Image (cartoon, rainbow, N blue to C red; front, top):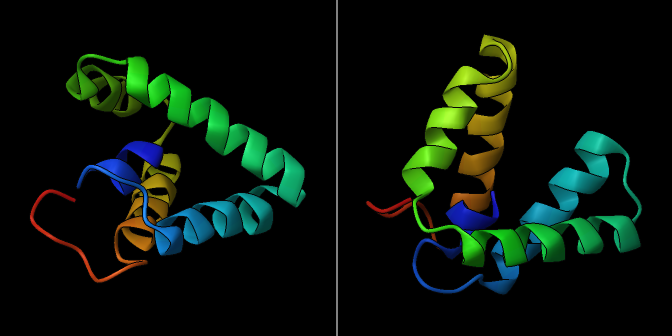
Length: 88
């Protein structure tokens, strides 16, 4: 989700708010834990060389319901600022 938020080179404030809201509402995290998780994911995202391998892993892990939920969350993050562009 952080990678989706940063696909245009930065994480906009609306995207950050959407990320935090999804983590708080969807997983019952408080704000501090949600922010810590986003910070950890942000560091991880900056370190990975190939986002394609991450996508492949997501395709192998979980079931169709999990993947559909993740795709819905990704769309929420991508559209949080100004709509979805071709890279998102």
